Length: 206
Figure (tube, rainbow, N blue to C red):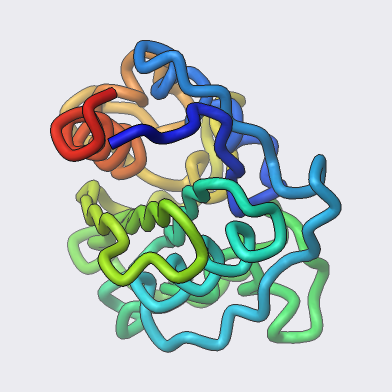
């Protein structure tokens, strides 16, 4: 199937754009954030990562006329019944706080302040949705997760979001202390993009 390699990323998150650009580079795909096409954020009113990923991809594709890739990802903390989950990016703001990565992780730490280490299990979830066009009846959906635990204080300067409080047992450090290469090999998004690259190559002949 002939498909343009000029795609739109249904996000304006600089961290996500950097990761997707690097991980999709081997396919010679040029992906630009939706703001470069004047696309406003979609209203994410789904109740799951899958629903929100599809909503965002369809919205970006409809406005630009281009194939669209969306990711809906977040952190699930078991002791908080899966919160912040689909609300990870606005966790602090939902409680009247600042809308920022740092404010979000501080709220998570505050809510876990009395939870012992062994009960601080968590995982990052990532769902990718790719739509060839806005009316694509069979969007390509990929889901991957990354298991870890939540620290009691931030560590590390790399990454973004909740990376500084996500403990990676395999490397005995936080996600924000991993190198770019290590994170891409381990992370929920890294795993999802690699699986996506394999599937899109097979299905679309890239």
